[in-house]
Image (cartoon, rainbow, N blue to C red; front, side, top):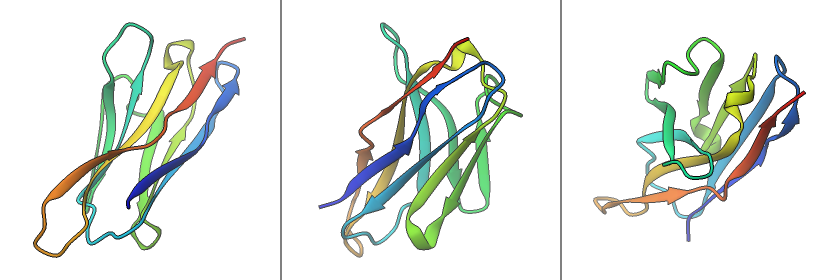
Length: 120
């Protein structure tokens, strides 16, 4: 069974930094994309950073402040968040479509979510 387990998060003052990580475990053949979403109460989950082989993409709201990176050998994705703002406060989720069998389908998996709070 595949799991995505997140770590990191917490509370920080505006301008501070945090680092999140998310590791996939289980029977894994390939992970084409690893991404980060975030969600605030009453709003839809928002995709803001993704990483596939050789490329990364960011939403304008985090560009220049957040950096997504992957360690494919460890099936892990990281999110370095710098210059955090109060509007970054949210529950952060990692996401990955994962292939668990050769020539098999890709199934979507989510991490458990971790709270990030930016407040003075």
